[in-house]
Image 1 (cartoon, helix red, strand yellow):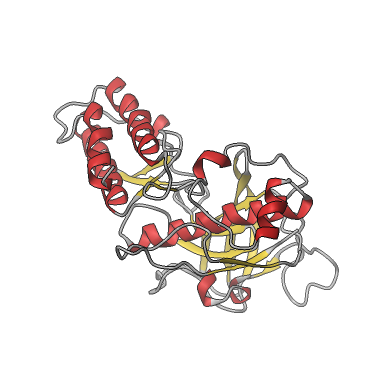
Image 2 (cartoon, rainbow, N blue to C red):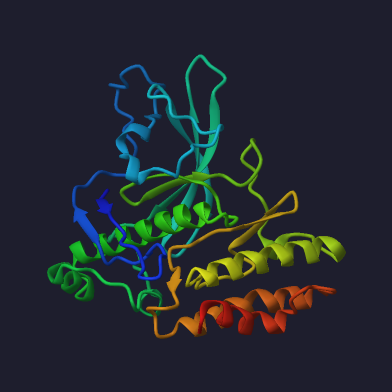
Length: 306
């Protein structure tokens, strides 16, 4: 079922965009995301597909302007599910082709769908969400007591957190997939891969060596330094949630992004991110880097003022 949440983020006192739930407001209604409508009344669309959900998301729940040229925004477009791309603890990623019938306008996107309260709940949220707040005490109690409503709200919080993190990071120029839109607990985003649906390899599986290895490391350092300067850490960074396509690094899986200023453990998350990726690059034989892997954690703490 779907929950729709409308979010407003206040600005930091030092001019930074907040990524917490301080001003989250919840307007709750439900609609299945896991079972598309495949009734006989297809209203002209191909049987088994759904109409594009683009017009169901208000501007605040769409990606940043200007929209990329590859994005299909036609109201007559159709979404076709192509299969599952990746499974995870909190949700699964599917491939969705959005296309306009009788034209050559088409794009393949990744659809990340967070699981509802009927599935296994998130188990890693406490440390990441220290410093985040939900204004309504009744909502907070529901989350803490793990009621059905609280679980639905929590799933929605993670989806909102990731979508807004993607939007903000994209606007900061960080290497993340372009966030297309959010509808309830489904995030549609740029698919990093080939047109045939073959996904880009994770960093852990990328065959990098020599100058190529160093180049990707430098991209990662630059991204993490920028994030730290803005006051944030990825929070769960590893070679398994970074992708490499044609020598370009992409950072994914951002629902747990950590405000290192508000979170008392912010410094720990900066150090852990640095260690997780630094260890991998060291084992791969990284040489001649501008920042040594063992020095990255201290650098990020300095840049974040921690």
